[in-house]
Every structure is written in structure tokens, then in C-alpha cells.
Amino acid sequence: MIEASLAEGVVGRAIERGLIDVAIHDLRNFTADRHRSVDDVPYGGGPGMVMKPEPIFKALDAIEARRGGRPTVLLTTPQGARFTQAAAERYSSSKNVVLLCGRYEGVDERVLSRVDEEVSIGDYVLSGGELPALVVVDAVARFVPGVVGDDQSVAEDSFSRGLLDFPHYTRPAVVGAERVPEVLLSGNHAEIRRWRKRESLARTLVRRPDLLEKATLDEEERRLLAELQELQDGRIAELQNRKTGQ
Ligand code: 4HQ
Image 1 (cartoon, helix red, strand yellow):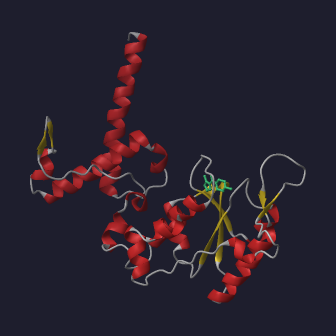
Image 2: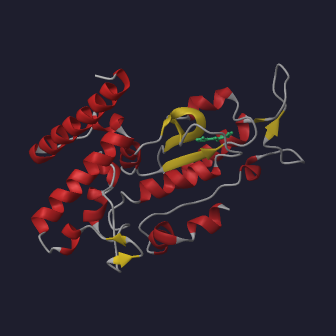
Image 3: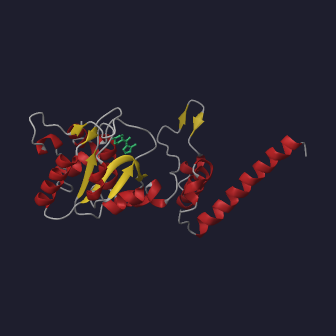
């Protein structure tokens, strides 16, 4: 599953071009028993199995020896801090990152002594850490110089700017009853830039107002946001008045 995914798309091409190097390690290769067990029953009883610590410690030792230096060790778990674009950028400056993927109920708590950060990709339960690990690899790889063709597009990416993206359109200009906004056909680049800023801000205000607290806005953006907030307040006042019959 991991191999197949890493062969595709932007990450696949980055590996092909030698811009990043991703190695997959099977914990069973670091076991000593006849059954090559990587899990065992939980102390204290209860359902499910727990990942054994020793194969993980041996695997981490082998990786450290092979890469020649202590890697940043991440554990994918719903108990972790939410994985963000800022975290992806931070990890991209580590020479080596290990993504420890748990299965079953999770890993023996003592493994955390070797973990730098626990990361969660969202509040839902998956059956293994492999998909979260692939998510992290993808988001981190995009910050490695050369991986994304256009450096400009990485800098302007929705979350790097701290705002949601503006709407995109391509040809044809008319589909059924739906027309492309006139400003995008105008050729007026200053107007287009302003329209996109306004749309980004409006979407963020409505869908993810929490993002606005951290977003760094320029002068024009602060003014546009104030206008949008006034419009929104007006609409809320209108709704309130309708309810109270004022
Ligand atoms: N799991 N974000 C349980 C996740 C998860 C998530 C990974 C399921 C670890 C043991 N990981 N295993 N959400 O749901 O990172």
C-alpha cells in the first residue's frame, strides 16, 4: 500500500528525481521469535493487541545507524497534536524523519521515550498509521525545494497564506446557466488580484473564521476583511430584527 502510493504523483516524481528518499521498514524484520510477532496482548486485559516495544527500538537503531544521525521520530496517533501546514514546513527542514505507523490498539507507551512528536491527521479512527504517514510524507515533500515545479505556488498555497483558496475556473466561459465571473475575463490583473483576495477572505470568514486569528494580512486584506465583516454584521442584524419583529 505504501509502495504503490509513493510511486504516484508529485511524491513519486520527487523520489525518481532523487530530491527525497523514502525507505519502508517492515517491523517483522526486527523480531527474534519464530512467529515474528510485532504485537502482544495488553497488560491489564481488554480487547485488541498492542505493538511490542523491542522491534520498534531495533528498527529505530537500524535507521539511525543507516542514516548516520538521530532522525526526527514522529508517531501517527489520534492522541497527537493536529498535523498542520506549519508542522509540515518544520519537518521539511529535518535531514531525516521517521514515521512510526502503529496498528492494532497502538504502541506500548514506553516507545514514546524515542518519539519526538505525536501527530494526528484528524479526529477520526483509522485502522493503521500508514495512511496518516503517507499524508505527512506528501505535505512535507512539497516543502522540499524542487519537488513542486512552481515555488511560487507553494508560497501561495492556501494554508501557507493562512487563508482558504479563492475559486478557480477554466474554459468554457459558460456551462449551462453558470458563467465564469466577468472580472476573470477582463484582463485587468489588479482587479483580478483584488477579487481573489476578497473571495479568499469571504470564504475564510464564513467557513473557517478560526484561521483569521493567525493569518497575516496586508493593508488591503485588512480593509477588505473589515468590509466583509460589516456586510456579515449587517446580515446578522437583519436576521435578528426579523426574529424579534423590530
Ligand atoms: N490511527 N491520525 C490507530 C489514527 C490516526 C489519526 C493511527 C489509528 C494509529 C494505531 N493516526 N492507530 N487519525 O487514526 O494519525
